[in-house]
Image (cartoon, rainbow, N blue to C red; front, top):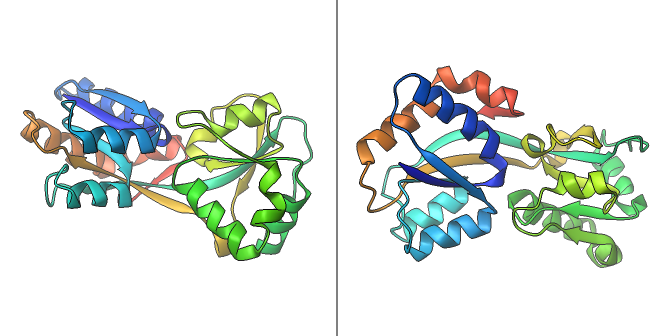
Length: 226
């Protein structure tokens, strides 16, 4: 089998597929790229994929377009957006919405991704009325480039990304998840790609990934079962 996913789920999917195959499940190779690119490639239909793993709304769009089999969508994990600074830097207060707004205004540079969390942050900055004020200090990561690596290199002073993509990056300090009032949580789902020649095995794999047996692997990577 062959799958494609966004970068946010790369490590947890590697752990889950390893456990699946260790238990005798059919082998699968999952390519992890930027979420926008993954969706475009499945939409184009030029490549043979059995499964696609993306944010829930992206799977919905592919399903509506007929590229994902109807009723095959399975919600797998919930990922929260966290804040990071370079190792050794002072950690800003992010305990409230006002505190996060103040931290953003004070930051020399702000980084976020092209994925769901980045889109949500852009809307948040617009709602706060500071989008134009901070525009020159915004650094949007290129698809597939971890925001954490930009924080570690010093390219950005304040980074926002899925916790799952930050927890294994060296050279950064995770300040914490966004407070509840402005939490940016993403449900990652999977779907069976139309035309898959391994439909039965693919659906068995998704059932395993959604089962309680998979919960510990998800938490290990900074996520929660969906």
